[in-house]
Image 1 (tube, one colour):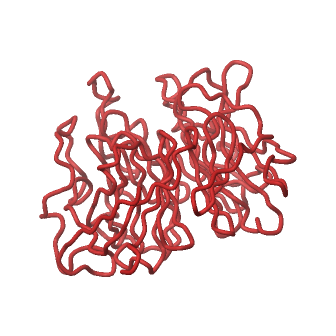
Image 2: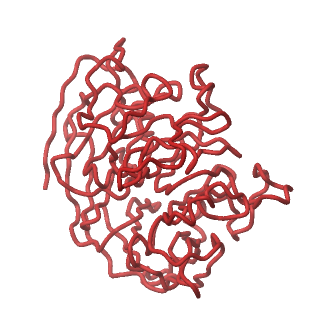
Length: 416
């Protein structure tokens, strides 16, 4: 949301048992009647800069704690650099592996052989086979959609593919590339890579600005596919109703722009709003509520600095016409995949946002009220894992994969 509108309040269209306690909790998981802005924050590390937030609660919000007893189980340790996870209709999980294959993992943790038949990926650096989603009518058409770093003459780019999961579940049939986020760049960083369906049956896709100094400005270039959130059809065409539709000076597939490297996308289960997380540099990881056609500022405004310690650009954190993050992190947690919790199994988690933290080696839980973060908790920090992606299962549990190849289940403790 923008800096000015923040103050107006936007209206929205193994088996390790862990029992944590707090005082009574409201339906959103925050302490009843508590002003969490005055509570000690979960983050205690020193920030990388002396930048000031645009509004109270934009960073280092007060800590909350889950009161419902829950348990953490490691279902599998055999995955190879998993990157994306999605639920199949029967409750199993379809998972991408960065090197270019997919696997199916059953609810008991049993893993399939590698699913082949996908286009070649450039798996160097941060590239490879990335996020995935299944068609809303998967039960009938078995269609799968994914994002990957596609090798091209002169470098590579973020691309979207689709194909049909064969009946024997060993291959992807009729795989094809439906979209390429040009221009090509010879690099190995910042591909974005998340994908999901919106309620109209179109695809939401994130791309990165490819990190290098010469490509950063393309996050602001409406003729470029870099540093964007895109909205496309199942055939890779610009979706109807996009904010730049019919404007010759902009790509019609662009939904929002000014992004650095978006690796988290999720729709709020109650409001239907699109939220994202993206990596900052040294400081400045962001949580944003995405509005169509809006500019989210990178690299003009940021709460981060260069890894060298130098300030970025004109060192501006707020500027009229550029959207402010709902929340930011300094130091960073490196937010990757995200999911909102929609189940009633753990009521205090309802509508909370869960973030896979890579360098933070935990799962962050953000309590959100009226489009503001009002509480934060860190889960599974004792596991020392780089969490890459997370989803909610049909049983009301959270399922997360890590860079080391583990699949976790985090759910209500049996018998509670």
